[in-house]
Image 1 (cartoon, chains in turn green, red):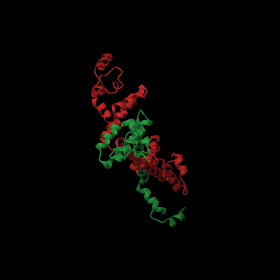
Image 2: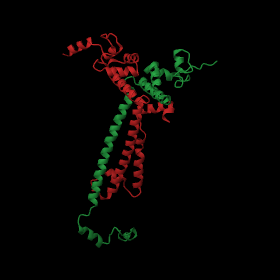
Image 3: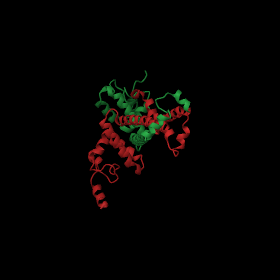
Image 4: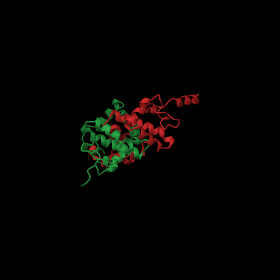
Length: 145
Length: 178
């Protein structure tokens, strides 16, 4: 007869009851997953967390706990909080860069407006005299260039 | 004065020993990080991680890293208390989205800036940036705009070592993030 114990009950070498709270989230084929979460949080705390959550949210909760436990094992000092801190820095840097580029765009736009404005009506009549009119089509302009 | 304060503190049990109702010895591992004036700090860490797990974690770390470890544990415990389903991971998701959106906006703004610079080029004075002038020709204008847009693709792939780790873990536990 094959064993049907979940990873948690296998870990504790106990009988896995039909209503075992860990069984749906810690299958026997992945013992490392339970070992990881148990190392950081402890089985008793995980059991309490599961009991306090509605059934439909337990899968996501266990996934996130597993992820956090893995982060903590890989980085025992900062864990997940280190990633949050890094992302805050990235966010701040991206905001600064964006503000800088937007300021440059505003400056360039203002420069464009200043350069495009005709300086006097004399200039406008000079343009008309030479037949250079922005309303003319390209074929006609080609005669002059 | 510090010595007097320290002596006074030694007589007073730390927050962990108060909560656990035990004698606070002078080599109590929690005492430097869970002062009696902040009982909530230990309470929340104990609720999420458990005192014995925290003790083991601290024992495995060199002394100079323990304060940072406690701060990060408190942070994670707070996040888990506020959001019992996603905890810190919810914050990571949110921040990643924010960063991605900003990076897309940044890429677009930089492209817009380049296009404005190129449009400005015929009217620009002689002292203008040579790099901008060298890119401008009737055949090359559209290519260089496209080239710069393509170069900005790095902003669409957020490559941080910790986030790469996160993405690898995501693939391992795929049900949440598909």
